[in-house]
Length: 113
Length: 113
Image (tube, rainbow over all chains, first blue to last red; front, side):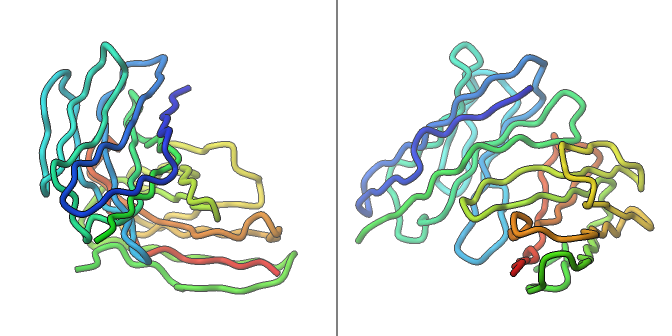
């Protein structure tokens, strides 16, 4: 089956500095789409980024990610972290049939002033 | 603006009781999902429905049973709750397949005493 690995449980960064959240995956099938979801405190998860194209950079709300199938990675980056970016971030992939998302374990991002 | 509605917000019950959670989406989506988010924030798919048809049924104890009256409603019943069922249950919907973005409801927090 599919699996998504997020190695960091918690990432702490100072406001204004760059941040990178790692995401790698394993799949035995053709995977359709990759996502980053963000969950703010006491809120529902919401999609941040989506990609299905190899080596194409996707951007939204100052965050960006590039799907690299050669290294099975879809890391999330931002050049200048903001206090409001503090949240829980999930990397996820959609299977071939498209009726199931497999989520990573999540990375909590804490941005300090 | 919330487009996926869940009731109740919270529910506290005792081991062995039956509980039901409701979910309604007003987005016109074809596919609805139930996820379980445990105390460690692990997010796992439980069920997927497409146009009232059960598509995905992960390894979920048989005491869990989803019910769909139409494509806008997906309920979850737990026949005899166990302590390990304490979690947040998130409902989501999307167009057709999960390769499209999923929209999550606010969740129902279940506490089993």
